[in-house]
Image (cartoon, rainbow, N blue to C red; front, side, top):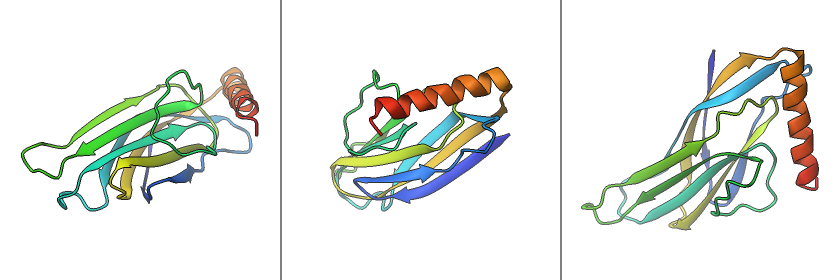
Length: 147
């Protein structure tokens, strides 16, 4: 089953996608991640980084670090005010299965437009051992973040 989520996130903000369950037997995997500015084609430069994390972030920035084990995916969107340069989007995401809430952040390095995001997650049933592994990974990530 595919679950979809969409929203409008302000520059410098964080959204929470609530996924946790009481028993942790439902897991999710990212299958699609897309973004578009709130007001596309308005003649202003836009450079934005939208990221998906396994843990809540205390600092919202436009730095992408794939050694961060809590980073599930990132999207870089750029659009030039000059119409002769087409917009571009680079999207990278992990296929890791998770069973807790995820967090979407947005930081613009040029322009300050809010970004619309669209996220598709594949819902998977976890057996007891998969459930335990996913939950322990999430606990370890929270401890690593110092929360």
